[in-house]
Image 1 (cartoon, one colour):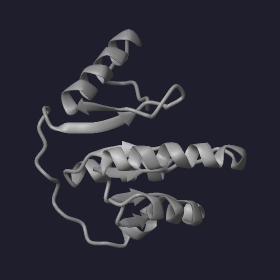
Image 2: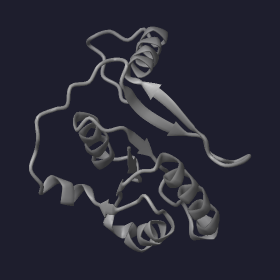
Image 3: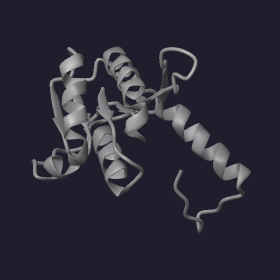
Length: 146
């Protein structure tokens, strides 16, 4: 399990798929949106990190102070890295993955209680992509990102 706290960007895409290629499971987290909601956001993120028992968090350098605070509150979180730091490391061959392997843990917003994780296999994710493609009448000539 690797926690991923990045804004929507190419870095998120690279990190997400890098986690999958490494044979790990991504657990995306929303970055803090505003200082006014920082305490509530911190409480939710700590709950998610504790639940996921993630040893690694990938984030942006601009959130270093925030992520250090998360690390001080989460016993399983051993390291915090940026995508740039990961790019400077060595690559490895892709891990073998089947459709039944866990592909993602998606956490609820936690607006009505503690966030809860939903475990999705690669088969679940592919079925969802296929359903979206059918509903949008997408063909092999179309390109879209969700």
